[in-house]
Length: 584
Ligand code: GLY
Image 1 (cartoon, rainbow, N blue to C red):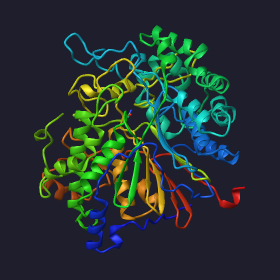
Image 2: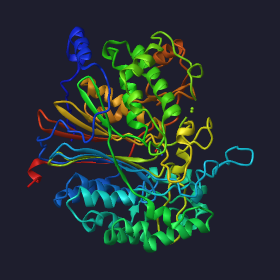
Image 3: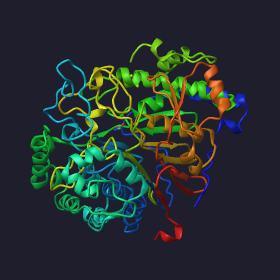
Image 4: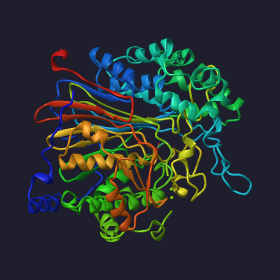
């Protein structure tokens, strides 16, 4: 079902003077609001549900939960657990993530921070040799790469605090899928081949995710009976089913036997944190997005803040893209310089999102020539990863969830502690291993994101709500360091009132992240004439071999009360939009 959500907020539909006036009146200021935040749609309800996820079986799990009377939060639990089973390359019980929630009855908005934490025995130099050079692959492959998972705690927390249904119901689809198996897809096969070496090195991982030591053929059925047992323990015991008892012993025993540093107290001490999301405005749009320890919301709002003073719709394409690239360059530079886990380091979020800061950054932009990143103060770098997963949900009451979950690189660390079926993440690579040395995504940073015991690594995940008086858009995507610029490109289209969910997920993508000083772009993002024009402005451009990202969007047009959803054509996802006669 394709429906176009039209937002009547576009400057494109207004005269330039009116448009400028609106920008002036709104002040074009992106700012943090006090928490809890009153949403602007409290009271209105869509009367039907919609879901977009990266896998049809996860979408089916959500449908079953919503039809059984669950709310969006229950559906989110079902989706995350199902994805943990059927999309092991992207997320899972061994990983973590950020869940952005909007509760319809009172407009309460919160971000559940279920980011992984460094083990308590972690040290800042744990991936460096005697000469202080990074040891190759230690932060990527095997148990030493794994931080303490957050997703199981998030499932229990979501169910207890926000859901209506018991975990026995919301986790039932995932448990069934783990026992009965799921069919290997082309994407699974491609990613398993990519991570063959790491998966082979872990006998428990190879047994489940490979077949005779090689990536299974399409159509092969992957069954995960050990994982089903762990999910059943979570049903019976809540978080203790993972972080204590038999599961905890097996996880820690397996990690330590293979050279890792986890202890039982790492697991017992793990907790999710409810944090205020970051919020801001761009024209008539209110943006709600992930706060630290994700850089996503801050970098997104900073880019929008810089761009807010330009009348982008009236710019020729090359000028517009030039301004976008320059806003990306400057905001990713600030990411590298200042951002880290705010429970450990002091980050002046208000200052970074202030109008004064945007004015300063904008002042350095030459509309007719590219800046060079190495002449800007600070430090960072390209991106291989297109893993992680995102889903978007709205229910009949208007509760909504945007959640981006990850195990970091494809199949995480590739390591499964024997007997658990839990594929561990390699999120330790999201820390700065050494200032100035790029991680998997080519990102560098400084002390703010250095490793410390119990600290959460800086993320780029950007689950986001966009809201105008007329519409709500729920979005997010995987894609490592490129996540934030993908969300930016869609936000600008929504602000402009152009297209609908199908157009937004398909939008061609380009990205700049300060260092390396290069504009990465999808093969079809620019025509040759545009490439030439951007080069004449001084930009260095590099086409990526493959398209990237896997965006999942749900939109609700409050004026027409139409629901719409779209799954990225680059992925294998599926949407479900409830027909109103299905609703009781
Ligand atoms: N692991 C990718 C991210 O958190 O940004």
